[in-house]
Image 1 (cartoon, rainbow, N blue to C red):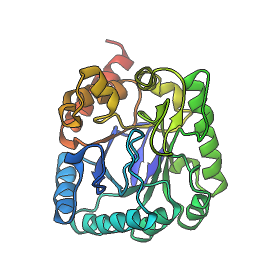
Image 2: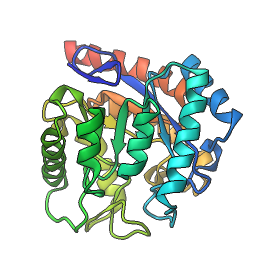
Image 3: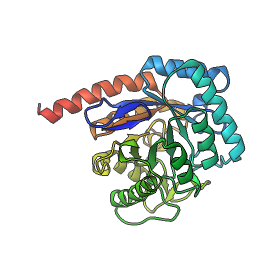
Amino acid sequence: MNKIGRVRVGGTSPVRIMGILNVSPESFYKKSVKKGAQVRQAVSLMESGGADLVDVGGMSTAPYLSTLVSERREAERVISAIRQIQRASNLPISVDTCRAGVARAALEEGAEILNDISGLKYDPQMPSVLERFAPSVILCAYSNSQIRGNLTERQKTLLKQSIAIARGAGIRKDQMVLDPAIGFFRKGGKNPFYTRTQGDWLAHDLDMLQNIASLKMSYPVLVSPSNKSFIGRILESKDPADRLLGSLTSEAVAVLNGADIVRTHNVRETREVILTAEKIRKTIGKGL
């Protein structure tokens, strides 16, 4: 059984909820952006709603947006948010960043988890941060060059590369969680934080939801479909605020297909979905 921060995940543990806290004004989902005292209020609501962890991000990495900010600004946003979180809650804190300087600053402030959507491949200094702090890590499938062939097999290869980087930096297997990177496999984008691939990105995202179990490789898997573009495309809705029901449906599918952690903007609603889907999954596993 693995642990992410202080929380046990995978195996016989219940499906965990990671609440998303955005402090980046350029985020694709404006309703999720918090600042100042709003951070404390948001985290308190997450905790009361059933969150097991909180993931804080200081720069949006949506592939279709030009959202790059300086590393210094990202770090300032994250540090301020962490201090606000700690005033309101004792939830384990994850930092969502690909930059070593931001990760270092967050871990020094008390973050316990690094959530790197580049799978530790974007910043060559990231392994040295892991060596110093030994945090839990969430490793996303990522490549800085175009991939071809079977998506699931290519994702496994990319994840194995990230696992090797983490192990080389002294991170134990039981400190790692994998993320198939729903929403980050595209034909093109406006920032470096996506994997270039051929084919329809909606088909890719649906394929990931379907094949969670085959991506595990004996590790827990985190999924984050909340308000993503594939839901908007299915519902023909350009506004992320109109994607709640689609998000919850996708999260239920993810749990039924083996997800161990759900990262979400909608903690209270997601908790009800997980409780239901997990009960169904266990019942199906025993045979109806």
